[in-house]
Image (cartoon, rainbow, N blue to C red):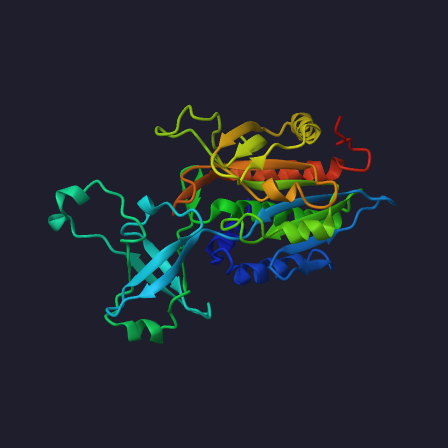
Length: 362
C-alpha cells in the first residue's frame, strides 16, 4: 500500500464540476505510463494500453475523480457565507465542522468553520434538531462582505471538507476516500500495465461529476464502446453498532462483487451487472485466493447505472465495491488490505479478459 499516494489523492480538492487540479495530477501521472492519454471536454481522463491480440477485445476500468462538497450561494454583509450542497453531503455532519473555502479562481483556499449556536444559550427545541443548509453558515473569521471578496471568494466559490488523512488502528480515515480509493486502484494498475501488456486493450477511465449527476462519463463510453467495463467505487460497510446486520459487508473482508444496486426512489435506477461477467470475476477471485464479498444494496447508485446503456448495443458491466465506513462524512474509514486486494483482482481481470470471454446473453 502506497500510503503517500493515497494521501495526495485525498488532499487534492476536486468537488464535482471543479476537478481540474486532480485531472492535472492524474494526467501527469498517466503520461509516465502510456503515450495515449485523453481528456475530453467535460474532464473525463482516459489512459489506453493497447492489447497484443490482432483483433484485441477491450475492457474499461473506471472510477470517479470528484468528491462531495458545497457551493457558496450568498455572502452576508457581515462576512458569513451561506451555502448549498453539491452532492450528497449529510447536513447532520456539518455543524461546527472545519472546511476549506476556495477562491473563485481556485488558486487559493482558506480555513473556515460551520457555526453552531453556543451550548449555554441553545433553546430547548434546537438541542436535538438537525440544521439544514438553509440555516447553516460558514465563519471565515472576517467581519465584512468586502473582506470576503478581497479573498477571492464570492457566490460560486466551492467548499470542501478540511484535509484530515490519518491512520487509526487498522483503518485509513480521510475525507474523499469515496472515490480516491478507486482512483488509487487505477493508478496502481497503470504502473503495472506500463511493462505488462495484455491480450485485450485496457482503458483506465477517471470520470467527473459522479457525485452530482452520475452521467458525465457517458460521452467517454460512447466514444470508446469497450466490450466490457468494471466500475470501482465504494459500498457502505455494515459492521458498526448502528449498521450491523443491514448488509453483510465488512471492512477487511475484501472488495464486494456487486449483484444489484438501486437508488431507491424516482427514475434514477441502478445496475444489475452482466451475470456471466460476475461469474468470471468471482472465479478469478477464487482461483487467486483473493477475498471477496457479495453486495446487493438499496440507496446507492454509481456511474455504471447509465454507461451500460450507451452505444447501439450497450456495454456489459461489472462493479467492484470497496467497503467504507461513515460514507460521505468528513471521516470516511477503510482498510488498506481491501484497497490492495481490489487492485489485485482488477489486474487478474485485465490479464484474463480476451476475445474468448463469453458475455453473450440468452
